[in-house]
Amino acid sequence: MITDYSQALIVQEVSPRDGLQIEPTWVETEDKIALIDQLSLAGFSRIEAGSFVSPKAIPALRDGEQVFTGIQRQPGLIYVALIPNLKGAQRALEAEADELNLVMSASQSHNLANMRMSCEASLSAFAQIVEFTRGTGVRLNGSIATTFGCPFEGWIDEDRVLQIVDAYQQLGIPGITLADTTGMANPRQVDRLVRRVLQRVSPADLTLHFHNTRGLGLCNVLAAYEAGARRFDAALGGLGGCPFAPGASGNICTEDLVNLCDEVGIHTGIDLPLLLKLSRGLPALLGHEVPGQLAKAGRNCDLHPIPG
Ligand code: COA
Ligand code: ZN
Image (cartoon, rainbow, N blue to C red; front, side, top):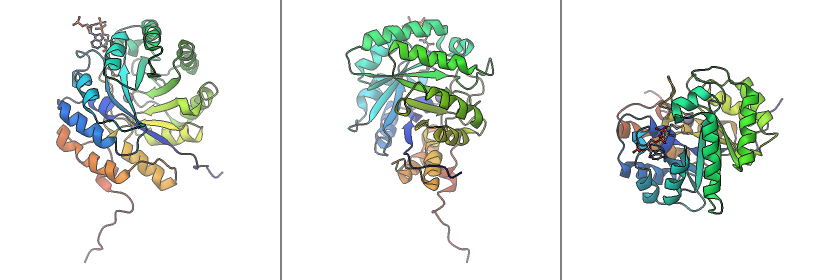
């Protein structure tokens, strides 16, 4: 079988949110803004620029207002804010976020750890948010964390995930993200679930959010792409992780993903040399090495001089 790689893959950058939320070192507001402004020139269609959650839960992103109002927005680029509740929606609209990413976990235990509420309470908060945002023009996306596995409960019933997709759609939330919060997905599972979800959600409205916690991140991307998914979250340098999930680690790395696509011939429209430059600046910004591999190895075409 020859795989058809002719359809573009849409990369959505989440390092300013998922990437920075777990960083122990405070990143200055002006540095966050500078990072987002640089990322805005790299060809992304969406950048998750921050979250409007409790500053006690995620102190690293407590400056969401200043970030959203300080960035230089590029036309057509959608700046997304993650929110857990109505208060988050109010703050995000005030700060003129283009899209609200509403997050709930498939598993009760992770939703309790992360959002300090039951899934039912999250869904009723989402109903309030749909009402509150009606007529404002802001876009809504619903993320399902722990879709492919929960660090507390293990395997998640696929029918449970489909029920949540249905619940989001009934509420009037058009965008759906299937999130592998702690990197528990495998390619066969991804293939099966993506095909089932695509019977309900169009490829334009479906995002896959993988973490590389167990090294399967890019395998899962290819499996999802081959099953018909087209939109993928990724973080510069492979930063990221949920502070309320034990053992969480980074998102799939944006520049590693773009390199994969470039090498196999899937169009992304992303400026890889710019990403590499930005990624190589992360250790100085954060005070530690980052997991991404391409920034260390260089591209295949970055050749070395023959030894004399
Ligand atoms: N933005 C800012 N502050 C908020 C807020 C929001 N979206 N939602 C609640 N708060 C404040 C309340 O005003 C209250 O403040 P006070 O103590 O000064 O009175 C405090 O947080 C507690 O409010 P409460 O509604 O009781 O929240 P909680 O303590 O039960 O926490 C969440 C619930 C959802 C706010 C919190 O768990 C949260 O922000 N989780 C997000 C975690 C996250 O971002 N994880 C990673 C991304 S998936
Ligand atoms: Zn994540």
